[in-house]
Image 1 (tube, one colour):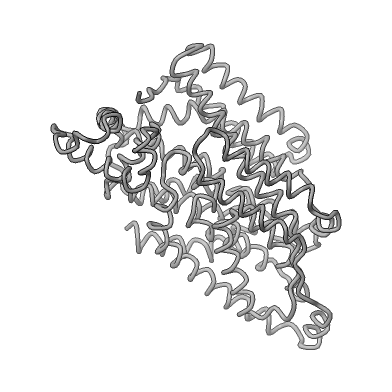
Image 2 (cartoon, helix red, strand yellow):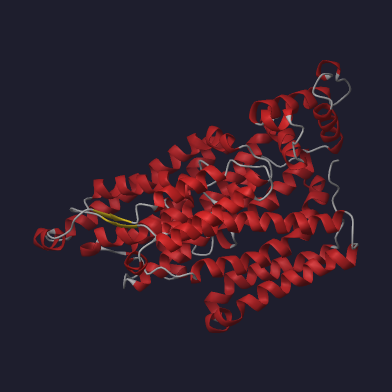
Length: 478
């Protein structure tokens, strides 16, 4: 049965707006108060919104189902993010030799590829400390910021594991391989542009460092990789992503891998990485609020999307990107995905596809009516990407809705636009993506001078990120 959408009051979008404003402005203007009270704010606003859905709309039916569905999505989301954080914290890497610009470029490229395997959070936590150590004799702000640009954000756009928005899209029915198939050209352009810019800046910095200092700082370094058993746990998490049945087996394996990693990792390895649970605790608490408060915002967008007319891919690219720059990119992605679904996912088409699946697809040739071609294309899409689920008649409403969108080439360009916008623009500020602040905190702890919020935008986002983002728009969304 195709899910119906509850009809919330437009005023119930305000808790979501308030929470995102607090996340953006709290650390800047009242950091002390925010650090003490953000759990109360996040959980309180989420509780208020959930209570409205459970008791203000209806204690049963679509509103009740929406709350349960969102709770499950939150659990799935935090299981992936948390397990990657714990496992990566059990691996300590030390590098040998001089960090020449060419070596640094290769390191960042490796980090970008790795981000698609262990997530931008996992890759950032795994590589930021060796990155700081290998550049210690000439470390400057550009090393930290370009690391955030490439490893913590742009690099992770090729798989749903790579960045939280893409994983949420995967949970909503975007096939795993579809992401790489459609985003790799954008990835090549974005990565090539950023790495070329970094090479120029880093070459200037490298020439300023006296050779005697470079030789002295790298004389006693050696290759080292501690916590090798955690590679196995990373593979367990990667494999678990592909498991959809039975329910919660995927998350159970992820949590088991995290527990196995934590208890088998030697204490000196955790100490060398300054490992603690504070960063993931903060993410978990804030996302309780985000997932809870975004329910009416997403439903309102889905119900009112038709009023937008026919927005272009450029609208979705810059729209999702602009919000991802100053708010968290995961709920931003979901918000724009809801708009696209409201505009293009016809419930009648979904119903016919569901009937086809339940009937074993035998009547595909006989499908007629105004939606016939759309029904056939969407059904074939499901056969291509989810043959097991179709054969087992276990295709979810989310998968059906996404198939309707992705089977239409004109519409799937909108999904590409919000995927690129949410991931790429998340690098524009410290608050655009979770790993950004985590990387800054580690660099600050290592006594690296990182730019402040405004300096980050003025010195790096405007001259580096904006030209790259405009180039991607010009080539793919113009």
